[in-house]
Length: 391
Ligand code: GLA
Image (cartoon, rainbow, N blue to C red; front, side, top):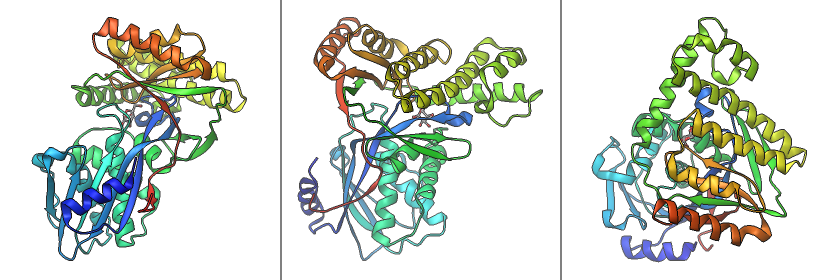
């Protein structure tokens, strides 16, 4: 991705030159799915695909935003004192919400600014393009106006945009991964306490392949909120006997012994996934640290099966990709990543087998689903940051 091209667009659109440049990545989650809002652990990493911005402060109170990806919306303009959600403002509601909450947190944004952004995260792929825009706005506004906002506060404000401004009841994983990502490292995050550790991911003989279903994630937000409500119901029922604050506090055996407190079978399955997936995530980190990539891959596979059968968030497209991946030579493990209901899966594949893998899985997918999947090699990169204007 070329920042120079963004500068050219900026000059064309705003008739002046930008002062600063910023970047925020997308993310994949290696394991620990639908555990963040259950007080469990996640293990995501930032990827080198992301969203870029070039920007310049203005003298007046106007904020003027232009996205090269959604250029048909043109320049979206609003006042720094007028930051209500507006459907017409489309993608710009993410930056708008972020600016609003930065102001509400007591930081001064004395003037407006103008900005051109462009992302290379595949569209609607569930690789957290929205968290990427939120954190991009965070580092941009903090950078332009010299605000000393801690990274964790920016992450929390980004989550608030998602929950309150946009209306998706998501957990903190995406904003955390996008905000705290580090080159060649996964982040093991305890979502209850927000304590975390980096785990080096050095897969010399393997690559992480992202497989995009290219399925539109329709109704995904309402189903997401439904899953979350089911977990809350299960937690309330378990709390009638157990002194817990979150499903993530339970071991597998503690859950097994108490699961009869949850009368509804569907709700029970959801809770089982949350508990078992959390335990799997901790096991996965231990296996990775011990260099047992094979065992790590098996945990990835179990994660997918649990998301398919107990949490029911996979669907035919993701299952087709992952089940085809499992059958290929050189595959250590494969699973869906992110919220599910379409979006992307990931697979860990031996270097020499990558080409065959893509050809074979792609062919199975096309045959069964009727349109093509896309494949990308994931590189693990840094979190949101200012970058050189000349880069
Ligand atoms: C989405 C949400 C995250 C997390 C995942 C599922 O990406 O934004 O908070 O819940 O789904 O693990």
